[in-house]
Amino acid sequence: MKNLLVCCFLFVLNISFAQKPHSHAHNRIIHFPDVPGYKSIITDFHIHTVFSDGSVWPDIRVQEALKDSVHAISLTEHIEYEPHKEEIPNPDRNHSYVLGEKYARPYRLMVIKGAEITRDMPPGHNNAIFIEDANKLEIADSVEVFREARRQDAFVFWNHPNWVAQREDGIARLTDMHRFLIKENLLHGIEVVNDLTYSDEALQIALDNNLAIMGTSDIHGLVDYQFDIAEGGHRPITVVFGKEKTAGGIKEGLFARRTVAYFKNTLIGRPEHLIPLIKASLTVEKAGYQGKADVVNVDIKNHSSVEYILGNRSEYTFHAHTDIVIIPPYETVRVEVKTLKRFAEFELAFEVLNTVTAPNTHPQIRMTIKTE
Image (cartoon, rainbow, N blue to C red; front, top):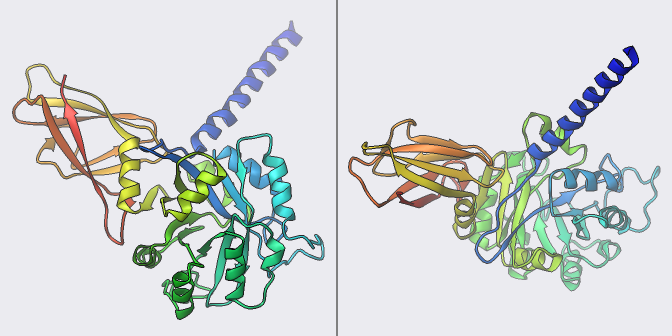
């Protein structure tokens, strides 16, 4: 009898422990709904392993990406910087990709071949992804290496332009070399978000020069530790809007500049890409008046991982909220709207406060409410 009770206790204990990781894994998943005409593809294209200055083997990067439900990654090892080369000789600069692709093959995770071109400012550090051979990027000339990336039909973006090691004031600025690279179609994107930092100045550079808006983790240690996953944090990523969820679809979307960065529960992107994503994320499930009152219940559902923070910009006031409404991920929130008289249809307008389309600029959305 005693043994039976012990066995039952251990069985219940095992179920309890088995459930917790499942619940935790679900909470960390990064998800966005598709938008009209495009798939919303979750990517992180700035990642390091022990084959440059990272701390982990490529299989860990694959496991982290799977836990976060990332669709595509690139192991962008430094070409010019290998602090572990005595312990881990690396004559083939494609080896990190080869291992990562092998580990990811059984899953739906895409590993894109890439590398980091590591130079003083200018041009600073830049990632080339969708390359053919990282070894061919070992070129001393800081312009010729970009030309080689173009010969390989690579997508190239400027890394952490606000990095205080190269910009002591933390301000991203274009140099004459960067202007030349953009003019010659050798530079296609810029990190507005890198690791734990965001740059208004980099966003303005992207908008002024038709560069793709990028967000990356630039992870060297563990994603869980760096971004406080256990406390509800998330890695920075780039949402790429592709015609199909394939490597080719991602590449076409990047060159078309259809991207949104996701950073600390904030979305950053051009209005033509960001607003459709918000509208796909937030839908009105139902709306109906409260009995004979001129107060209508509007149920708004969030289909994404973002906790949206909405500022009321309508002509109506609310009955159970101030002018701020928060819609948690995957939840439905009821907003009670005082319309003063009954309508079969009316509009609500919100400024989405945790989204950015330009420095100090938050987009507005309008919701058409049809009452039952």
